[in-house]
Amino acid sequence: MVAIADHLGGLEPFFIEFEQTYLHGDMLLDAQADRPPAILFLHGAEQNDDRSQFFLLRHLLFRQYGLSSCTFDFIGHGSTGGEKRNSSLQQRTLQANDIVDACFDSQPFSIVAVGMSAYTALKLTEMACVRHLVLMMPMIYCSGAYSVTFGDEAFEQLANCSCSTARSDALVMVEHFQGRLCQVAATQEMGCSTNVIEHLYEKAVNATQRQVLSTPCDATQLMGYANKNPLFLKRLADNIASVCQEA
Image (cartoon, rainbow, N blue to C red; front, top):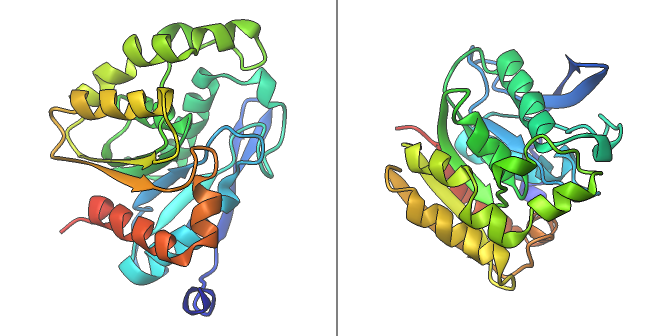
């Protein structure tokens, strides 16, 4: 990773007002190019997840492939802070959509999303001009869980495996998606995560390209594993670039 560390570029921080707080984020752009970022990165919902986990990956994509990017911390994470338990899937979608409105100037862009944010990414395909999707360890949910706060016991009941996979509106959204779709699967993860990836793959019949990339880590450690394993980080960057780069 020395070669990457020797050529890191600067991040441009931003603060977007959302309801009673500010969403903290940053952009990695080519100063010579007058265009919005190419990729929106959305972190997962684990307690320690935040935008910093994409630092090396974003710089590798920028330096090697010229792919600019934007990311931010959802409420309850990173420097945005706040109470995650008071947020919801709907709130996360609204937060992400506000970032899109502020940073992408109505231009097409791709999304790289982890875990719960895969559902947010699919929601955004109905709200913005999303070109391609990379969904890492995707999680999807039934529509009944959409507006329920994470701290509500009802959320866990509505977000169980059978409901979220078989009845999720995400399956309809991915069926309508016409860009490239790449999913990253954990070879050590069985059950719900595997079912989600299989269901999304089967339903993505209108995607111009669909593929599944496997990783030996478990579902909650993807970016941590990538950041500690340069060869896999490079492989991940290569696959993201193959999906998100335009001819």
